[in-house]
Image 1 (spheres, helix red, strand yellow):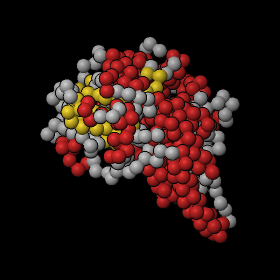
Image 2 (cartoon, one colour):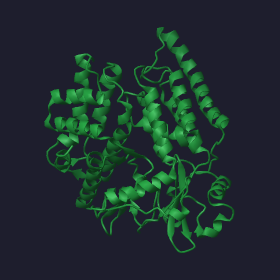
Image 3 (cartoon, helix red, strand yellow):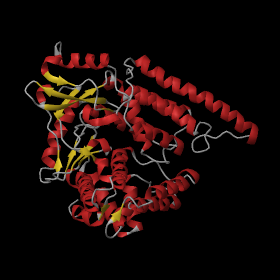
Image 4 (tube, one colour):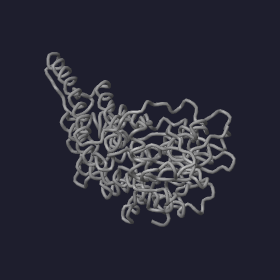
Length: 462
């Protein structure tokens, strides 16, 4: 059966089955209410860490700070911390999602793993809050704009939730409705979460957390502006107009506000359906190549990138072979200098030129020129490893690759155990998020892609 959806999540509720059934939970709107949730997380962690600290002091006379040996870096404590942003949604939840993608050079592995749960769907807001948002955005009598409005959401994420609606003129729509208070709480949420992480010494001392927080706040403020996302939808539709296998839904200006985004409701199936046993390998490879080429066109050609490769942000249309691109809230522009630097380091990595990789790593900010040689060498090792799909000749089998486990092991060894890796510069955060997420996306659908041949033509211009 073909399922239908637009925006994050599955299709119409009657088509979606039991996959989306989280209980509704009210979104805290006041500054005090949101701060209280973070403070509770800090208190819970402090009590748990105190007990572990006393135990370690009695056993071996030591209490450690950042890293795997931190008294707070346990799986239980990590899950306690992750639970709070999940309740808050908004900036706190989004920051947790971003940090979970940064790897062991930013957070202890237990916390990166626990925060990864935040990439799953959030609980929706209850009906009273939902109706309040729609009343404020559309005015009294908002229901008269629609022939049908489904109360049960298609999906719920960190910034808002999506509902199916049919306008009075028959247009089928997906309405992305923002949680109340999210836009004005972004900076406070991020500052509160960072303060807790600093208090508990869960961040490496050399990390430029202020710059990271600033970058996250700027990006999240953009995501919370649905008028800006509507403009991004139109912009990307033009950028990919020469690719008939990609589809971008239209935004509907008469029903779009800063807090409600009205888009086409698109037919199709979840991208995960490509992993089903009956799907031909050639189909998986074709979709994988399409998406991987899009990633590098965004970087090297468009110089603007949708930086959230969540499965829910894509939709596969098996009848036409098209892939619909559904969410453009997280969109980042790259300047010419940044793109040219990435083209240079990419070419060097593909050629296996360690000296050139080192020079360009300094240029981008992965290392400093006055860093000790062993740190620079370790950084080059990591870059060459993670660029394995680009360096591979022929089709790279993403599903069969153990690259993620090897990268984690190497990062933990030289990053945490030896302390040789720097935290990546904040301006690379969203690019890394897209590259890492795209790898897992292709691995999940079982795609085999000749990335080297695909990317080579794009590297000739910058």
